[in-house]
Amino acid sequence: MQMSKLTMIYWKEEKFWLGKILERPEIMTQGETLEELEANLKEAYQLMIMDDVPANFGSTVL
Image 1 (cartoon, rainbow, N blue to C red):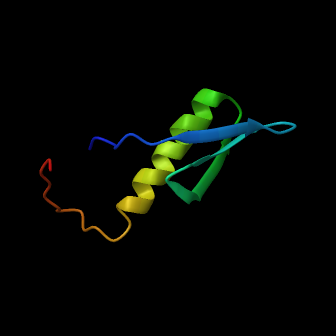
Image 2: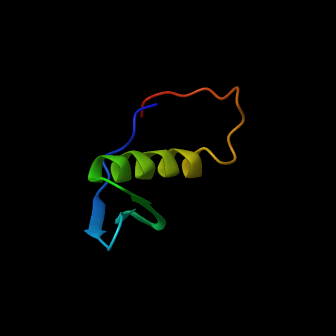
């Protein structure tokens, strides 16, 4: 599944990078590196948008 273009905003705390998706501010996570933070945000976004979708879903590009 291809993700839409989203904006990651992030900042460094003491130990971890923290970030959220600007277009979906309720999605927030952390990572030890910026790369890990980005991967964690992508995973959180996918989990959120697919939360109520059954496993045998169909899709098409709009």
